[in-house]
Length: 333
Image 1 (spheres, rainbow, N blue to C red):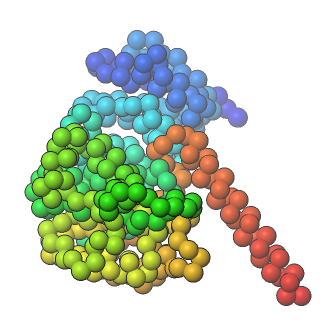
Image 2 (cartoon, rainbow, N blue to C red):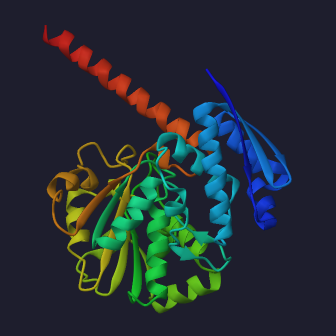
Image 3 (cartoon, rainbow, N blue to C red):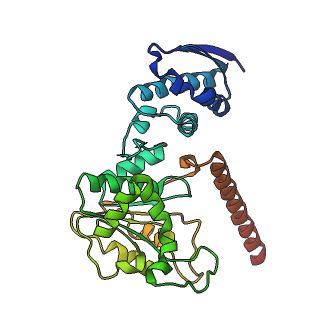
C-alpha cells in the first residue's frame, strides 16, 4: 500500500478557524473518517496516508472551505456526513448538497440536506405533489419535510400546514390516559411540535397554531375534510392502516402538497392489520405526480452509532430471514 503526502493551502485565511473547528476538532474527525493524518500550520494542511484516502481528504477540505466562503456554517457533524458521503460516492459534489438551502431558521441556522439521499428527497418534494419518504430513524425524513412546509408557508406558497400522526402505542400498553381529548392525543403528537419548534421560535409557532395556519392533529381527525392550499405531512405512516392511508391521500385538495414519512421496520399495528405504508408502495407506484424516496443508514444524521445500530439490525434481520427459509425447507422434506 503506497503512502502519499499532499499539502492543501487556503489563500484567504478568514475562514480557516471555522474549517479547522474548535481545538481542530473538524480535522480530527476527517482523520478518523478517512484514515489519514493531518497536520495544520497556519493556512496549510499537510495530509498523509494511503493514496486514495489522501485524495479524498484533499477534496473534502477544499469543498468544505468553499462552502464556508459562501457564508454557510460547518458543524462537526457536517464534517462526518461529508466524509462519509465522499467515501461512498467519490464523485459526489458536496457543494451541490450542502449549499441547497431549504430554510433559514430564526437562529440563523441554515437547514440543508446532509446526504445525497436527502438532496434527492428535497428535489422530489419540490417536483411532485405527493412524496413518500421511507427509511430508518434519524435520516431527516420528517425534519426536512417540516422545513419545506415552513418555508412554503413563509413564502405564502400555501396558506397552512397540516401535521398528522396515527395515535398508535409504540409497542407498549399505556392504559387509560386521563384528561380531555386534546390531552389524550397530545403525547402522540409531541414529536411534531418538537420539529416545529426547531424551525420557528415558540411564540410564533404558538400564534400560528392558535390562528389555524399550523394544525397538528391525529390522523383520524382528517376524515371528511378537503385540504386546499395546504402543505400536509403524515408522520409515522407505517402505523396507518390501509383504510387510513386511502382516507388521508384522498383529503388532498387544490394547490396542496403532501409528504408521507415512515419506517416500515418499526410497525406497531396489531398483527392482523396491514400497514398502509407497506401496501401503498405497490398501489401507487408509477403514478405520475407521486414519488417514492428511500433512505438507508448512510443518510442517518444523528449520532455515528445510530448508523451502525441500523446496519446491525438489518444484518440480524437478513440472518433471521435466511434461518426461517432453512427451517421451512427442512419442514417440507
